[in-house]
Image (cartoon, rainbow, N blue to C red; front, side, top):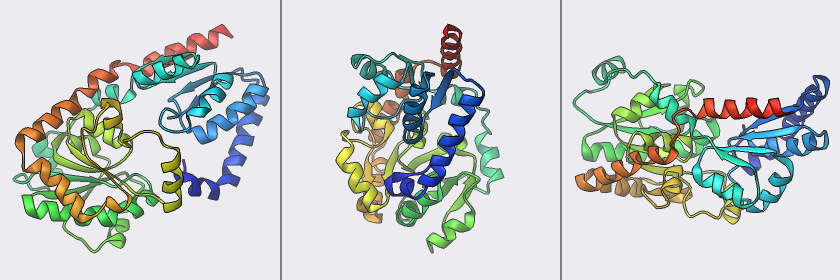
Length: 322
């Protein structure tokens, strides 16, 4: 997947080639039902061609048109036979527009429930963490372009917070990000990098500074108070701001219907603001606990503990109807 309008334009030749290859395969194998998953820029375009080919289209993980591009609901109504959504308000949104939609629950719930955690002391020992200090978790994104834009400002703010409240800064990342990348982006050295252990970090961290995206919802389900941060290409942000109709960018805030945790966007992502927002949590125990409880309650909103199974059953039933 490619992030932002500018980034997508750069990769259009590759995207077009993949679309051509997929359509060729559908034709050669005589595939009658196509399940499109996420990635609306690619999938809505290919859905138009599949519709001309008279294929049945099931879409799993809805495009977030409720946030931007609401006009595309009419296009989706024409192209998609069945929409499977992750959030209850999405089902309402689509049904009101006449789209056959079903809320199946969010797969994060079952993923967390089935995860085998390493115990706190063992986890700290394995990763050379100080058991006497709480963790300030920094998640700057899972893609190089995200990290490059966010990490320099965020790590400076995180180190300032850690010094003030005697915390240890841990940068969580996926295996595709080289640790050297962080060193190239900032001169700060007072942090540890831990790869592929985000769930333990969510569970054992005191506070998070997390890039807007799915990770903020994961953190919320663990009840981890956080500061949501987001920076992108200036042109991408300008275009997005014109299109987005929601007040919040963080999934936790969107699902809650209120600003439960603070959001810092573009130039607001700086040391001063990060220090101020983190201090609000770390200086007020009752405020910290109330936010944590509100975040945990989102698990009840997302409901179904077997989202993937539910989605699969609906897809199989739909295929058998062809």
